[in-house]
Length: 506
Figure 1 (cartoon, rainbow, N blue to C red):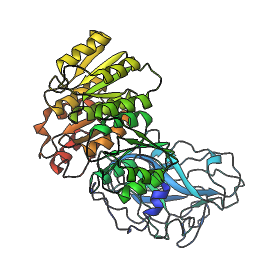
Figure 2 (cartoon, helix red, strand yellow):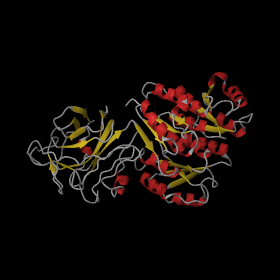
Figure 3 (cartoon, rainbow, N blue to C red):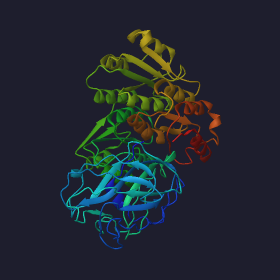
Figure 4 (tube, one colour):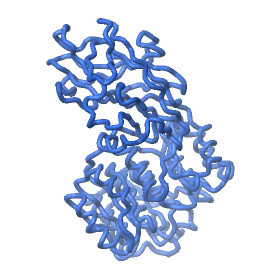
């Protein structure tokens, strides 16, 4: 899962108290960071209540709040003179002179702002080290990167009181952040925890949580669908995954846009908002409100769910042929949710059919002929998409080019889609949602498609994953480095959530 810092969101969150903990993950706040003396000139690198200068060897130590893979560190930095030397940071155990745990990729000197301006500078680790709750690590600038060597050249920490009015550096909710006093060094460190939830108090806030933890500021496009029903967002989730875009949910007709959605769209600042479905799905009033939030707002809609999926396909894939098309029933959501994740990864349209019918229907047939795929995947068994429709597809594209990926239950079908499309033995992340309702997994399917990750369904109201053994078997095969659950404990029980952690190999 890709999680990066979003500065504008971070600044807006600064009013959060420094004692805050992450309730979803059980992480504890960092202890206040130690003041570490500059090891060259015996001057304090970080002086309370001062914008202070730092030489090489500057370091800060912090206590790790959660076990996981250290993915990156953001520092507020500037440089005071011209340099041609790139900058790295080291992560060391216990102290600046402790065992070397990781060295960051180099950051080009030209990407570090000149004084007096300061900004977040991200450092990434090609091989993220495993750290454990309670570990003490040091973040170190190991070498003097600037000339002349006699100048106080690096400034770490709080550049201006306006950046952090309450002196709190805060990280995304799927990670842990650094909670520091306003006079101390301000930085954000993120770790990929083995197990995490993305959730909010309702379906709209959950979609926002998925977006804000995985998408940067200023994205090209955002997809918007009603959270009151599932059909429009099913095909839209596949399209959003193909575009690498977030999918946000809004209420059905008669309800205003939730403030959290408006705020998130303000941060995403998209060039285009794609509204999925007609006015019965996203009403004209909300459409007009969305028009105030992006330069371009377009609506993709047909007179029913099947024609809407076709309009999404036409807009997303205007220049066929395509490699694969996924087919799922539009009468229920589970099969299409898992299929949407794979379709988004494979840059494949997802078309909906009346699965109980004996024919595709002329509109779907016409769109399939336009797309001219080399293969067709049917998601779900014959109870979901009839044998007659399968036979029609085989007549159109050849028996060897049409496959059905299914199981006896919705959980087995999602596992079968995963098994058929994802190699096992160490996927970076697997996503999990309840198979009993659709909202949480709609936005999640778009993310899974973007990340090229499987989406598995669980019986979220049960206390044990043993009630869906196919899911456990598939997770054992995948050996994920992380599992991310969409939705709170009302969607996926704490019992199942805890058991999911046993399948993770960080």
